[in-house]
Structure formats: structure tokens, C-alpha cells
Length: 63
Image 1 (cartoon, rainbow, N blue to C red):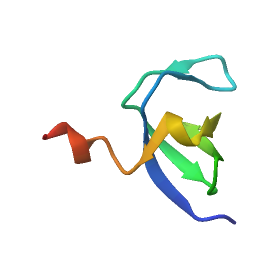
Image 2 (image 1 turned 180 degrees about the horizontal axis):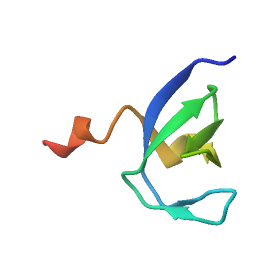
Image 3 (image 1 turned 90 degrees about the horizontal axis):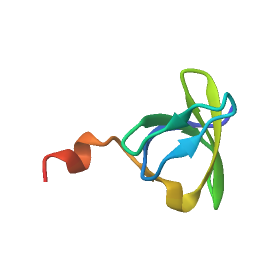
Image 4 (image 1 turned 180 degrees about the vertical axis):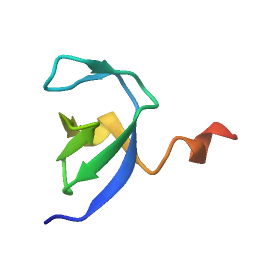
């Protein structure tokens, strides 16, 4: 099983379910490279490197 980490969406991204997740949504990320698999409550999102940042939104919210 691939290592998982948390990330934060930087732009709105649609999930496989059709739900569009807004910037700031916390996602569970699997994989590395230009594209990764991400999940929000079991909903799958195919993310490109520019659509998310590693870490939680709290990291930048206090600035």
C-alpha cells in the first residue's frame, strides 16, 4: 500500500461522484509525481501537482 499524506486543495476540483470540492478542502493524497490520487470521504479525485499543496490549510491560515 502506498504511503498516504494530507494535502489541501488550491483550486476547485470535481470528484468522481460529481461533487466539486472548494479550495481549502483537506484531502488524503496517495502517490508522488505530476499527478496523484486523492480522496475526500471516499470520493476519488485525480489531482495534478498544481491543484493541491502538501500539508493542512492551518499551515497558511494564520499568516
